[in-house]
Image 1 (cartoon, rainbow, N blue to C red):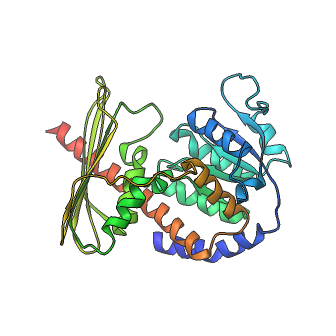
Image 2 (cartoon, rainbow, N blue to C red; image 1 turned 45 degrees about the vertical axis):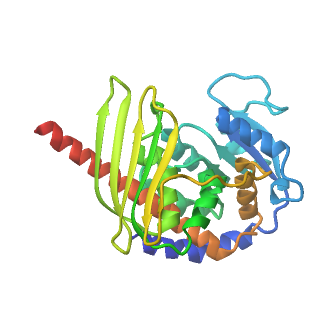
Image 3 (tube, rainbow, N blue to C red; image 1 turned 120 degrees about the vertical axis):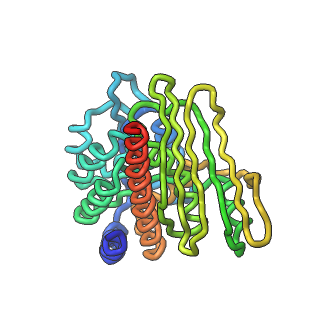
Length: 321
């Protein structure tokens, strides 16, 4: 199913990209004024010189709170943003559980959308949203700054040409905030790492241990590569847990147990992502790159869905026992 949908995306993407090439400025609204929303406003107002991001302009922001002007931009309602012809782009920076509804609202109005990962909390709804974007002839871009980090870029270089035998990727952190979804979705950045490094994966087993009163949850997913090599992905969240990502990858020639220290780049992660999104708006991203990205997004969300299903089934069986 995912393969068929991906082919459809690829065929329609050419029209979307070429159809956007005549635009010059894209009036933008930012929805959600947290850390990410503030970063988006900052970067729109001071884009990377001579980059596609210079084609964005800040028209206002949307928030559930009543706020004063932010960097010269006034607070507006969703209804205003949808109605205004000078607003072409929406940056959705809300909690994960609100992504789907907010994206759909802007897509229905023919607005381009940039959203924090994950774009929704189910694979099926994500495919529906991507289909809707194609129908409307607009760009729906899911941000993935974890692929732009120096440690990831260096890690991918370091494993190039090596044959995986077995691997572990573990993440720990503080309690999950309300609205962030099941760990396979809230932690989809780590799953995306694994897919980008080792290709399409299959879920063979998954489980979850949870104590809601103590705000603790631990998800363990068993994954398998096309070469039938095992990968274990663990997400553990709870009070007092330090935010740490660790690896243990055993290859045919060596074992890697520490993330490499990549070279920090002068351009920030959100700015790099903003430039990529803007390039999509301008029709400057190669079709094969768009196709590969769509396939990866769909595949990761499908894996996240399967992990959640198997974890909850395992949890139900344990409770029955």
